[in-house]
Length: 157
Length: 349
Image (tube, rainbow over all chains, first blue to last red; front, top):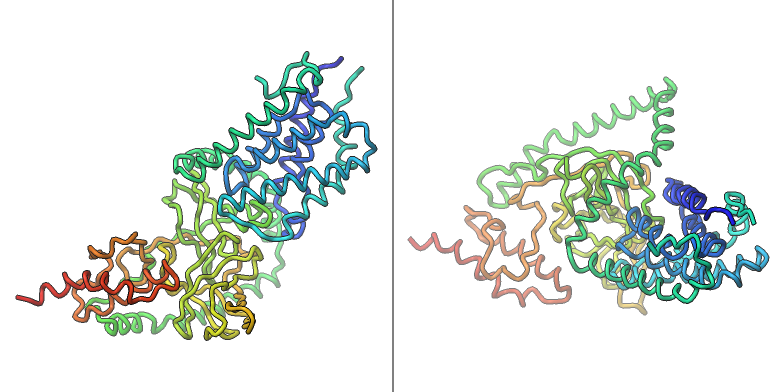
């Protein structure tokens, strides 16, 4: 068993954070997938023992620092995504990529719903159908991201 | 630390604790959220966070900045000449317009019963470059490169050359986050310039539109009406241009009209905005929310040597009426008579 993929996790999470924050034209920013969330989900599924919920929580807190109306909002949502990934990793990992996309879509919709709910409760409601778009684009880009991420770390078994 | 697990731990052994760990993290998140909502001390944490995130934002935005710089450096002579001509024409236009402004301001001051001519409401302004405009997808926020070190404070008015842009919501040491007037969270007290009717303009999330959701269906508002800030709400001085009405859909079935406003400020193309400091005590400066303390009167709101004390109550009434829409001004009538007390006092001797 090789060393844990922590190096690869941090590297890819950093790149994903940059992609998430990169200034883009407005319409691209609306369809931009949640790269960091997808990365957390990927590592929760592939390496549930070394990334997991803590990684998700910290990643979410970073997102909050940059763009959250309420601190802790993204932390909760991304931790939930990581938890689902860790809990179901054996069932998700064995599926073909296209079926994984469907699961990812469901998880991302849940993620957006947590943000939507917290936004509403905390008095910053954002009622726009466009806020659900990243869930769809995230699911569409999942096979591609999973392929790229799988190249970043190969466990020698 | 449990956060990143241990190398030897197998997922199967730790599977049972995943739910527990998630509950723990969720609990911490919720505590943070509640603290952030209810208490102000997390504002200090946000201050520190801004200090950390600001350099990252600057670096991330550097390709855009570099591109703008290249465009500027290699702009053709022809384009520069054209721009120069346009700017000169605009300068002339503005100069012509301001020729008589001083005289008019003095006349106006005399007309509203003030003996001395008024200083302008804006004390000073500070240009700030926009560092990042994509702070959160649909939320309309920008990050500017001025912060506490430049004296920027929370809920400060931000304008550009054309109109109201927004207000600062989070301050960092070297940066500040500005909430645009088109943010779905932003409410802007406005006044129709033609009729004087006051209402609230709410952001739609679309950088080209504000909505006036609280207008009754029979309100006198037309396409083309110009909206200015009303001076209520304690952030924006009165009289700054906000936008022009573009769509009015009165509906017989609904009690409220659907009205859209196009903001004057160039929210999508601005690269520089102005942070505004205004003079307290100027009649055009934003009224502070007095929280029901009007009964004791606030001398700062009263024009002291006014021979006709009408002006002050007139300024107070909308403030109270706006706090509770639908409440008749008569409800606050007893409150108005008291501030008049100190004014009538000197008349006795």
